[in-house]
Length: 70
Image 1 (cartoon, helix red, strand yellow):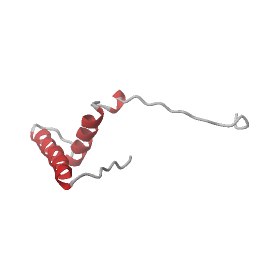
Image 2 (cartoon, rainbow, N blue to C red):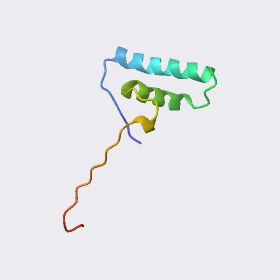
Image 3 (tube, one colour):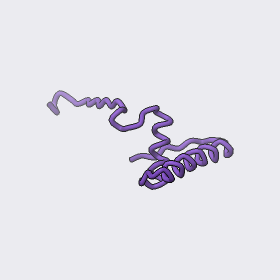
Image 4 (cartoon, helix red, strand yellow):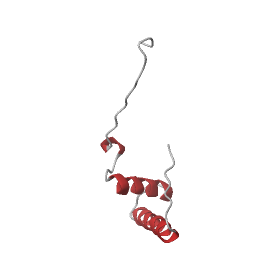
């Protein structure tokens, strides 16, 4: 888990939160059983990355070790 924050003018910050809250409320009204917070987090990630699931996010792990560690 991690925190993501943005330093925005108050009007834009309120608009972001209101848009996510409205979308979450709409999803819950249509039967989605996740909490509003879960929906807002998932919608935020989807809107920022364009990817609807974690499986769609490409991940690369790079490990650097010394020759002695081998």
